[in-house]
Length: 238
Image 1 (spheres, rainbow, N blue to C red):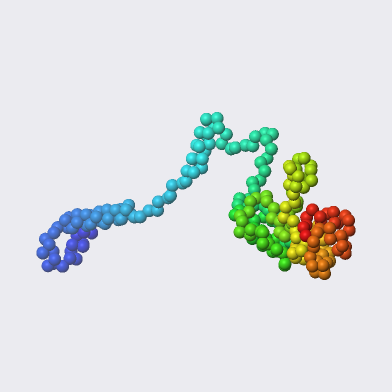
Image 2 (image 1 turned 180 degrees about the vertical axis):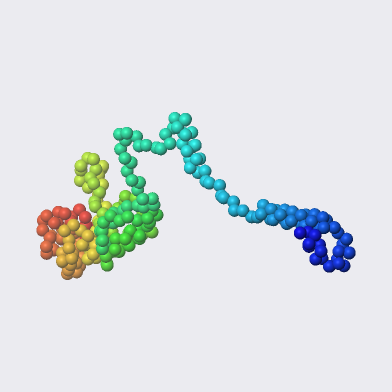
């Protein structure tokens, strides 16, 4: 076969090369071997995908649990038998105050910690029209559990330990008494048993008589009997 191929090669090529048929056969084998090596090398160095290593979190957790059991510790905390359940914690940053008196929605209000009296009044619907809030510090910071009284007269001080009359040694007299001669209608309505009608009767009486010269003149006001007078007497002054 090689001889036949060699015979087909032009004469000038055969003369120039001067190669024998065996030499051509050797060269052909070398060429085939080179092509085979090149193909093998290309196949062996081709890029291949690499699989990511599996996570070992589960194994690490199992090892940690085995370590706790080896030391005698319980890896899962369990409630103590017979112990009462803990009460739910109070919401952080919250206070509870009681707003009473001349507001639109008196009652218990929940406010953020650090709130002021003005915030409590706003939460209670605001102060009723005409209410005197001169003595109320609306910029004061509130404390949890306190009461904010709006437009209410302060009760008289309790008697001393001796039980004597007011002004005697060891006793305390009434404080913050409401003046019948200068009090407004809204202030009079804060007294026990005094509504809008009775407050207007008190104002009409002092207008006709030029004010009150004594507390006993309340008996002359229409609508005030002995029982109501006894309730009002410790809270007012002429």
